[in-house]
Image 1 (cartoon, one colour):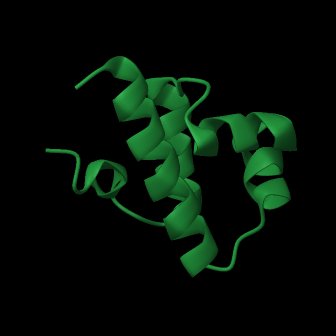
Image 2 (cartoon, rainbow, N blue to C red; image 1 turned 180 degrees about the horizontal axis):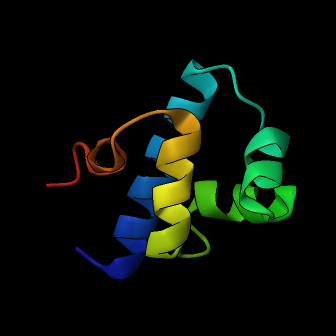
Length: 73
């Protein structure tokens, strides 16, 4: 499994959880202090997300951090 595979998986999980919680990309972007387009890049897996940002994403989505990795292995 490549780094890119991991980025894509985390992005898909992030998008799925965000949509399930009915949270908009703009809301996540504002909470993280980043642009909406950066959230899109994270969710597509085209950009890696740092651990501190990943932690903040999980907090905003109100899920355990590990849930973003579910199904990875």
